[in-house]
Image (cartoon, rainbow, N blue to C red):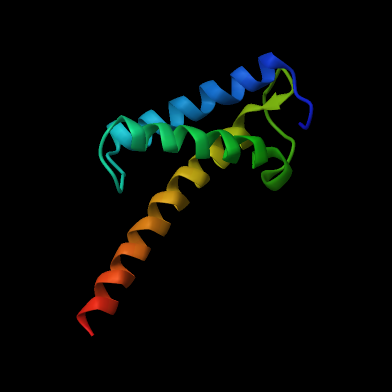
Length: 99
């Protein structure tokens, strides 16, 4: 995936946008409100989608060199883990200030 074509980049970007919109606006799984938080999920979703095939494997439907199912899984994992990390960090900070 290093040195990917513009179309591959756009395919990953569309996957990241779909995952970010689903997580942020439909499932309402978020740490921060607003468009900037959704754009952060898009950026992390793109990175997760890019890493999806090397982590989850090269299988399923392939579109312009991008395996769509592993890219979706990677983008969803990145979006989920980013929100989980920030929620855990906030909880740890609250517990630390109460002591």
